[in-house]
Image (cartoon, rainbow, N blue to C red; front, side):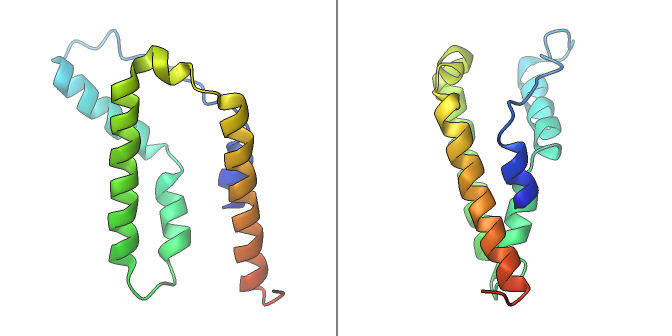
Length: 113
């Protein structure tokens, strides 16, 4: 959680735009999404939050629904709309929430809270 909070302070850098791929559009999108998901911190956040819960399936379902909602928002907005979002506000708020949650979970694990 702390690592995700720290990394949320910095903008993500897109290295490959997938423009030069010579595959059908649907396959390029599918593979590109898979590649992005492998490097995302989302699965680590889900693991950190549901590792000690009695029902990790609920966390998995929740994470899947959140990923679908985020993907749908990104697809609906398009690149221009997505980049127009106020990331200068969103990024520090997200980082602060993740850092706070990580600190609370970490201090709770050490039995200091």
